[in-house]
Each structure stands twice: as C-alpha cells, then as structure tokens.
Amino acid sequence: MKQVTLDGNRYKTEKAARSHLHPLLHKVNEGSDYQQLQQFTFGDVLKRYEAEEMPMRKSTHDSYASLIRTHLRPQWEGTALSEMKAGRIRDWLTQLPLSNFSKGHIRSLLHKLFDLAMLWEYMEVERNPVELVKLQGITKREKKIVVLTPDQFNAIVRELPRPLDVMIQVVATIGLRLSEVLGLKWGDIDWKAKTILIQRSAYRGSIDETKTAASCATLPLAQGLMSSLQDWRSEADEEFPWVFANPATGKPYLGPSIQQRWIRPAGEKIGLMGVGFHTFRHSYKSWLDRVGAPMGAMKDLMRHSAISVTMNVYGDTLTPEKRLNNDKVAKLLYSSKKTPKKRVSRATAQSSSS
Image 1 (spheres, rainbow, N blue to C red):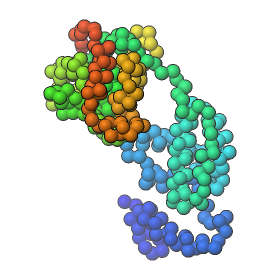
Image 2 (image 1 turned 90 degrees about the vertical axis):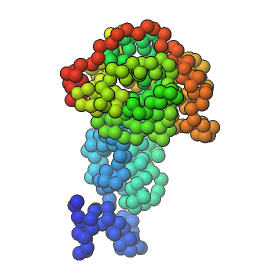
Image 3 (image 1 turned 30 degrees about the vertical axis):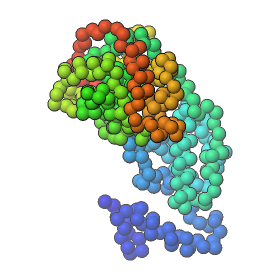
Image 4 (image 1 turned 120 degrees about the horizontal axis):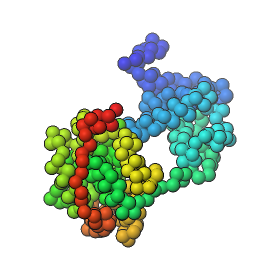
C-alpha cells in the first residue's frame, strides 16, 4: 500500500493525509481572500472520486469509468474548478457527438462530482453549476424501442438453441434484466411454491447485487415457464450451480457475446432489426398492459424503484394479483407446441466466452 509522508508524519493513504490537512488549511485561510486559496482542479475531484466514491457494482463502475476516461478527463482534468462555469459546461455538452440520452448520463455524473467538490471543500458551497445546464431530450432514447408480439417472441425462441431459448423465456415471462437472468442459481427456484428469487446479478464475469433494492424480489413462476425450466434442469450439467452456466467454463455466460451471436441474428431471421435482451423486458411491460394489469401491479412486477407508498408497503409480498397478472402474460406466450432443441455445443460456448 502506498504511504504518504507529511510534516514528518507517515500516513497509510492519501485520504488520511488529506483528512489531516483540512483543518490546517482552514486555519491558514482564515481571513484570506478566496482568490488566494489553493485552486483545486477538476482533475483533483476525479482522482479522489475514483479512489473513494466510485460505485462498486461492476456494470455501473465500468460505465462511469468509461465516461471519465473518454470525455471528462480529456476535456477538464487541468481546469480549475472556479473556471468551470455553467455556460462553458453547457456549450461543451451541446457539441459532443453523442445522443442526448448519453449526454444526460454525463450531466448527471458532473452534477454528482460538483456536489462532492463542495463537500470536500475544494470549492465554496454554492449552487451546483450543472443545475443551470439544461439540455433538450436528455431523458429520451433516440433509438426506437422494439416491442414484440407474442407470435414474434415464439418465433425468436424457435430460432435459438438450448439453453438460450429458456434464457429468453425467463427474460420475457417475468421481465428480468439480462444480468439478473445470468445471476440465477438453481437454489433460487422454489418448485413447490412456484416462485423464483431474484437476489444477484452477473455482469462480464463479476457477481454483484441487483441493480436496486427494489430489484431484489420473489416473483411468480407461471406453469409454462416452470415446465421449460424443469426440462432444462433435466438436461443441464448437475455440477454447476448456475441456471445458465457456460459448459466451457462452468460460470454464467457473457451477455454481450450471446446477444451479438444469437439474439440479434434470431430477430433478423424473422425480419426484426435491433432485437436485444432488453427488447424482451420492454415487451413484458407491453404485454402486462395488454392483459389489463393495473399500473401498481406493473411497477411491482417490473421491480422499478419509483413506486407509490402502497407498493412500497406491499412490494415484497407475492400477492395473488401479482401471480394473476403474470399468469395472463404467460398464457399469451405459451400457446405453441414445443419442438426438440439442439444445445449450444461446448466448442461454441468456448468461443462465446472469449
């Protein structure tokens, strides 16, 4: 571990040295003009944020690290915080060759970084300059969302080898995110109660908690989906605890590889472009609407964080209404006859894991 020596004292970390310095800086700067204080740069904020505040969840960590590496550090690292005015930030964001939705992510991270800069006393406590930066359309995705009909869903399932066809059924029938499906273990399924517990996620080889607290929940298993899972259980390698273990590694599959190699081509084969894993989650929401599920039940089944007080109270309970609405969606999807499936070969699985 790197140590820091300051005034003859040795500190285990830079954070400990900074904590020692803060009260000294206050004494030195009492009565001084603010312009004469040490001018912290945006790079100082980034460095401390990366060391102390970066999210631990791998998917979020990787996303933030990419924004910092690609956009924030090259543009602002050496800029004094006092020079980062709202107008300057707005002009820079506006000219970035990115979608408005992506610019919104950068704006959100900037807002968080300025809040921390004030907390760490790198700048005066004042209105966050990013609050003044308004961009049109930053909450809207520019790509058209593909929503499948039940017939299109079944057509895609028929194009997929086992176990990818079962994986997609899980996504579409209970609306899971890809990372949540890949994080499933056989022990999460209660066959007697016909439920499945969502309590972890798998992303690029890293096992994490679910995206939000609301994402961790017990969901109903409709009969059609449970039958598909039981069929796959009888074929799967018993040595692996993961429901969807790559036979070449024994670990969860890598989602991006599956999407590019299998899911998109399956969609294109039936005439649909841009089909991805999240297509099935969007479609699940659409199907809930189609069967007349109330808005509260939709939010509960989708496990969104933005729920009403009533849903906060009952959100963790597997209510009859939850199962009823989920069963209605399952009936839309499990109407066609099953056909024998070929499994993904070990050689193919090995190439997909790289």
